[in-house]
Structure formats: C-alpha cells, structure tokens
Amino acid sequence: MIVSHGLVFDHAAPSAVTIGNFDGLHLGHQALLAQLRTLAAADGLRTCVLTFEPHPREFFAPEQAPTRLTSLREKCELLAEFGIDHTHVLHFDAGLAAMSADAFVEQVLVAGLQAQQVLIGDDFRYGSKRAGDFAHLQATGARLGFGAMQMQTVRQGDARASSTAVREALAAGDMARARALLGRWYGISGRVVHGAQRGRTLGFPTANVEIRHNRPPCTGVFAVRVHGAGDAPLPGVANLGRKPTVAADAPLTLETHLLDWQGDLYNAHLRVELLHRIRDERKFESLDALTRQIAADCEAARVFHAGAGLG
Image 1: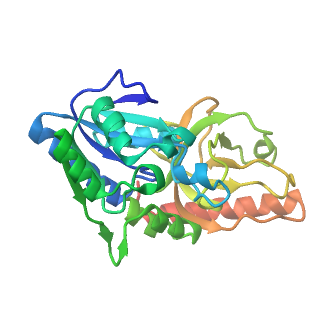
Image 2: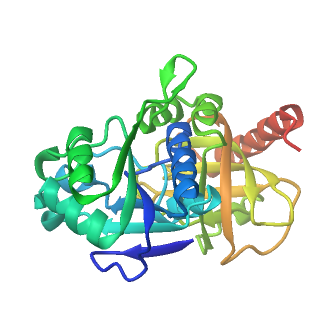
C-alpha cells in the first residue's frame, strides 16, 4: 500500500476515494472499505483512503478529544490488511480547517487525488464549519464529473458500529463486546523498548511496548495474546497503565509478560491483543504485595487462556 502525506499528490492515480478518521477500523469502516473496493473494481480504479492527522477534534479541542483506538501506524497497517491501495494523510491544521467545502472537493479530491468515485459515510461532513454534506458532494460531482455515493450506518446487534461504541466497551472492560464491534480483538502495536527492568527483579520479566498515544481507551491488567514474538501468537498477561506502586509520576506503559517463555524481545515490533480484563490497576502497599498480585494475575491469565479456546 502506498502512504502519502500533505498537499502534494505525486502518488495519485484515478481512484475511488473514501474520507474519514477511521479510528479503530470497526465493522462500519470495514463495510465502507468493502464497498469502496467494489466501486473501484467496477471502474478499474485504485482504492484510496483520505484520512487526517491529528484527528480534527484533537485540533479544535484537545482536552475534550476522544481517546485514540489506533495510532497512525496501526491505522495504516489495518488499511493495508483490508486491501486498500493508497492511503493519503492530510495534516489537520488551521489552513485545512478554514478550507471551504468547494475548495476541499476541487483541490484535494479532484485535482489532488484524481477521484472518479467518492464514497462517504452517512455522518461525514467536510470543509470549513462542516458545510460540506452528501448533497453538496453530489452536486459538485455532477459539476466536476465524479460519482458520489453514501453508505448508511452499519449496526452490530442493537447498536451502531462506531468508534464511540468501541471506546465505551473498552472503558467498561467488555473486551468481547469490543471484539464484536471491531471484528477482531482490540490490540496495541509498538516496539519493545528498555524499561526499568523491575519485572525481571520481581521474577516476571516483561516486554515494555512503546505507546505512541498517552490516553488509551482502557487501563488495567489483562490476559493477552502477543503477535511478533514467535511464529505463532503467544499467551501472556499485561499491565496497561502508569504503575502507581513503583512511581507516582510514571509514564504510561504496556508491560507484557509472556507465560512460560524466555528470550530477548528488545526492538521487536509486537502486537498485544487485550482479550480479558483481569482487574483494574491499583497501588499496592509494598513490592512484596505487588509480586503476590502479579503471580495471581498470571494464574488468572492461565485460567483464561486454558478455557478460551484461542490456540
């Protein structure tokens, strides 16, 4: 998959384009991408996703912006897995926020990305003050010679498949519900970096996975499955949080202990899937108490993995 950035469109080709933040790549997003692939195949076009960095809500109101489900790298990896040919990332700044709906379509979609078909979700808006809607897109397409289509909301059970619904499920520790909305287990990807090695001194060595965003949608201790440490996924237990027992101002970390495994994972790129929340993160009165709890967490993770049937 080609990944390009900014207001330079050197990699553009005649395309079927969809636009959005695509945070989490949930079932609704996946349905949109499937329809995009169908549109592109019918007309012999490239599939192109136009997305934004940062999320527009992070630009306008960073303190009120939602937690991210995926980093930009994770988003691009997932888009590639879903068969997208080209992802173009626009930096969302004051200039882009002030761009009119007409200018956005004419300069970015048509002149820039060579859009022949444009597919949007039913809640997508674009241009300054969110003035651009599907009616505007249709009218502009008729004038400039591209097709415009809109896809209706996808539901999962009795709820709309949305990034908000995924965040709510994760915050509540309902990992199975999040999986149903995502079509896969929720996970965090990152490179293993050096930490303080406290886990090793306590008898539970951990891989400290670097986190690119500082407000994950959930925290706590989880039974996990780890990709990238071997030929097959490996079972483990992980703490996602700030380790209040060892430091009052510790940075956010994802520390993962692989069950019954030994080896060196420094600089490896891992994907840690959060399968089941064992407990909330909390502060212990001593390292001995923490060590006992880690042993209990490992046992809880073993019990979960034994009964989960995940292989």
